[in-house]
Image (cartoon, rainbow, N blue to C red; front, side, top):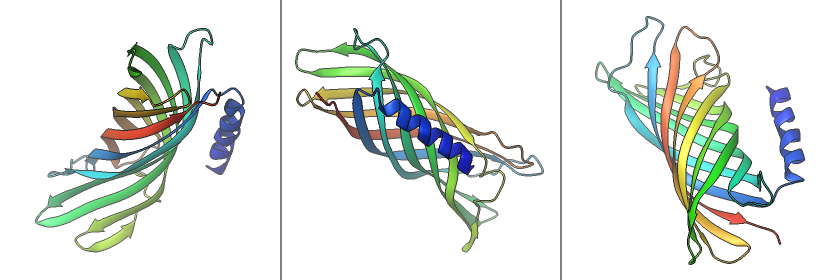
Length: 206
């Protein structure tokens, strides 16, 4: 796992040499778990949970002569939480995942007032860094549980509105939808879908 992050960190540094933009954002995740136990039974009464999202990265335009398509790579920190009630007993999960996100962004339109809209698609590779399960008021560390550990691959799609404050600073807000799948084999299965609303700033050195 440490070799995996070391490789991505080196890639991140290499990519930054040709970057044309730096950006950061914060947002809110609304997560729905899809959980199946070792008996292939789904947990009834699962409810969406909310959590924080943080992202920081760099991007560049693929075709330098046209500011239409850009590629970005970023570090992400996401809380994916959920709760449920089974046999009158409450359950809840609070997890935090760190990841690397790759996104292609296509400019849909811009206006003379510096407003614009981008559509984006990409994927996130993440690994759990903290996790607690509350089982009827008893807390368990789930970072080693195979259904929560391993590498999660998370395709995403989204829309992002932006406004250019000046030639160097742009404010943005948007919405992403994603679905995460665990690449680690386990007798208990876990995937989750996530809706993320975020606001951020872009910085373009001149």
